[in-house]
Length: 610
Ligand code: NOJ
Figure 1 (cartoon, rainbow, N blue to C red):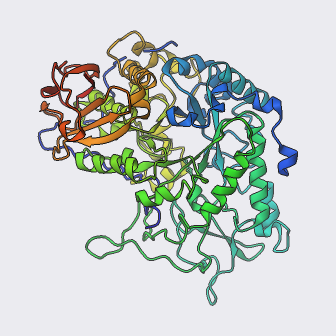
Figure 2 (figure 1 turned 180 degrees about the vertical axis):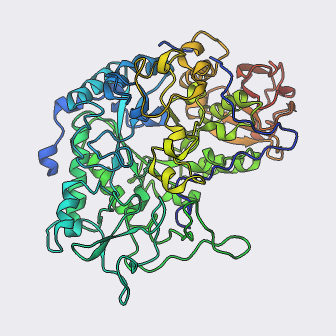
Figure 3 (figure 1 turned 120 degrees about the vertical axis):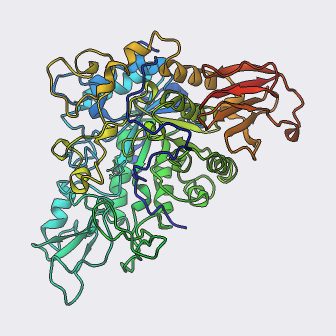
């Protein structure tokens, strides 16, 4: 199988709750509340550059124990009162991230950009957009983060540039320009009339044809995303070399890794032939949110050549001697075998292709969670899984909410993330329970896909709203009286860092405890993961075990009813039945025996086998 037919799996389908559950009402979570606050040779890493990254990155496997925190810079902290978050704002919040237990921050793109796709349309790969600050601000962020043992991960957009990038401007200038072949240009279909004779039926992820007519040079260019994001031609060695130099540039500034955007889309099938249409169960062609007949993506996603580039990116990263630069992939693939391939044969490609197969199940189906978590444990050839539940492209965690138990559901999702054998990635604001807050009318929409797709597709603004620091003006994100780039969600009055810090039972404190537990407990960090009680379709239960360490058991109640469970450990050769509770949600029992654990609605129990 090739990659997912869906792009970001943006279907806004809410979790299917059983009939006894209250109908979902979109409410803010009740407040719950913690924390304060050019040739390889010419780029060879200098001793100085090596010194810019935190010391822990000298450990080759550092990323396996890491918590990676995604920041959408526009929305984290505005330091200069323009309503847009910036680098100095992030630097000012590093202590908060340290207290939370973050090891590395993934910054979505901060390069100079026309901001059509809020930074994913880059016009200069070796600069900082003035909206976010200066290169000196970036260097200060890296240095201050290093002092706190936090690394910085850059978002590297390799599939496409902005149409305002000098490379594309040159490419578009004439058919004979030396940069022409840096992008994907094709003639229209013979016999047709431009702009209606597109080369084939391929579609942009963001709606409509993936081909844009250029009247001047009388050809179409290919864009997998917005029209303003022309795809680079990765068959061209000059493109590859330019991008590997970009990689070196940022490594030399001290970054500890890269998140590789849209990495499975680098290549197109050389036949450039039409895709098949996606069919519905009744045989009719599926119509997408933009009103297009939806086509498959077999010829544009996850082609085998992607791995050649991954290996070269890896080789470039590995020029960095004495410390590990980690490669993370945005990898929406539909099978565990596809995910496995992205690590490379000998783990010579990605370190952490994102596993979207667990976090984006988007319904409380115990057997599906069990299968997908187990697949990650057994189907990745021993490589490290990276679980992702939330990001800037998908509705937030409250998509799982039932309107009644959202708080408990938030805790349970966090427990699955942190008590599984995986590298954990979380999205800013998850820890306090920030909820998806989409625009209520089309004129408020900032994300272009929300404008094209309204009202079916409201865009991604809802998951990109400003961080809620306190219940004061602009939620502490920006100064009083400033119009923030996206409105502050009404939930800020109760869902915010300041009010959750002192409340022991807050979601923020739950996250913090989970993160600390995972850091301090060797079994939870590295232990093998085995699914237990596999015929129970109400409660997801698993075992973590490691040589010479006490075993740990976890149970998550996927229902709105109280459940009583007994851990079936005999098949695992574990005779111990008494338990020491490590963590549990309010209302869960503190059992003397693992034969009698009581879990309230969406309750969690984590215990050490005695
Ligand atoms: C994936 C990014 O996460 C998304 O935000 C962006 O729009 C596309 N890639 C195109 O770069």
